[in-house]
Image (cartoon, rainbow, N blue to C red; front, side, top):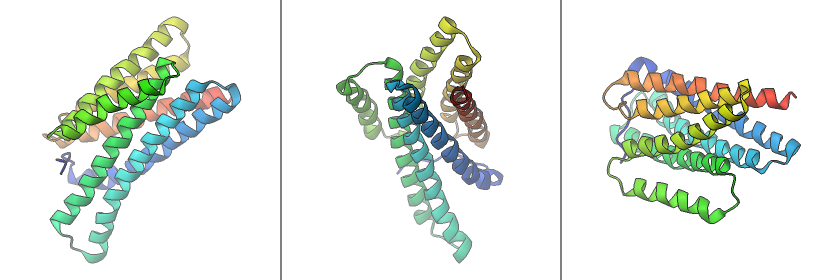
Amino acid sequence: MISLYTIPLWFLNYTIILGLVFTIITLLVGLYSIKIYKLSMQKQSKIFGVGFLFIAFSYFIKTLMLLIPFSKLHIERIIDVSTFSAWTSLGAYLHILFFLTGLITILYATLNVNNFRLFSLILALTIIPLTLSTLKLQAFHILASILLIYITGHYLMCYLSYGTKKNILVFLAFLSLLFVNIDLIFSQHSGIYYVLGDLLSFIAYGLILIKLILITKK
């Protein structure tokens, strides 16, 4: 069972709402990226989009697994603690797997190579240590941070090489996600870290969506 975040009671409803918002925004990012691929036939845009579809599904399943026990609590006014913990742990575990798969897919897009063996190698080297770890939540955020360092570095180089506001938007977005994962390493000790992480995530995904909307309007 995965040890969960410390979430302030006043933020529980917002957690579910933001989970739905993150699902919609990341889904839109994925769909816009695939639309750009159809317009430009740049394979990187397609892979980038698929990565965000994985992330969208990770938020969807996490939010769904929170909604189920909360709905049961609302209807029956009581819920077994072990049942609640089981649902939320399952949601957290599936969220971790799909979110990391999404990040690895995005990283693969930045590498600009056409080698499925390389993709599967990065996926295995990320997922296997996570499944063997006894501190899965911390391991998840450490692994996600490492992946985001490389992704952020790529978009920083793009900005330094080509400039433009669109490149700086994506760089700042992934930098924010990097800060989110570093921040959430400490979320089991204080609920404020979880709240801050959600707010930064909202900013990050919003920046990426704005960048893609600007591209498709051209």
